[in-house]
Length: 249
Image (cartoon, rainbow, N blue to C red; front, top):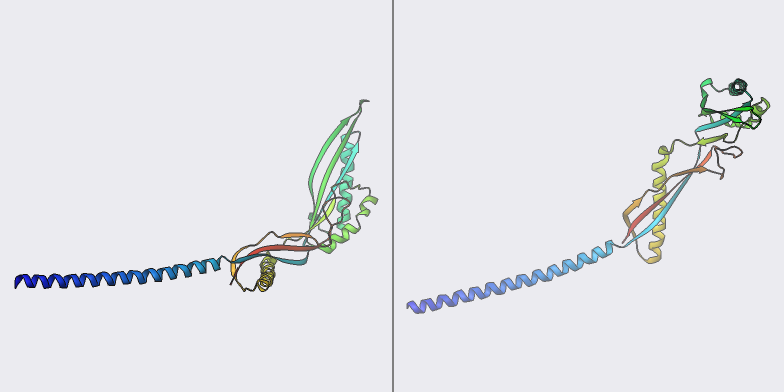
């Protein structure tokens, strides 16, 4: 009886062990199948996520300068330093009178540099040259334009403007318009991406990455400023190009 009981117990334990093994194998197989499906689906979704298009968007805006800077360079030459200095002082007085007549404050015109040079010729005489630079800074653009139009009045007063003299207009409120322009450039980029997606039979998703780009402020009509004989204007064009990478669905 003891042996028979032991035989029955061993058989039962073997049956349980075999069923546990089969169940474990079944669970493992199901897990492998599910894992393979999820892995394949994940790879497919990852591959789809890699689908993107990179486009550029442009935004431009015409603005008016809010700062005018006029650099005025002039000089005087004489055989002695005292005479050259007196001539420079006379030109400086004429300049201040010119701008005062136009309605500028006395502080609007400020000296920005001066230098003295001398030249000894072969005949034993010396020539002294004094060069001086003055700068006008104003936010009154109309008044600045009026001053430039009358610059030949300075020549009539004996002030000879040298190379390097010229009016430059600047736009200093770029930060006020940046957000809106970036939004417009991004909108323009999305329009390009949507056209690309339409042509390729896909849809445009969200933004994968974006680069704002560089803002440039240039003369609207292609003029340049800052040098004698070259005309600058207060009418500027602000431009920005953004680069945006969109997902494709």
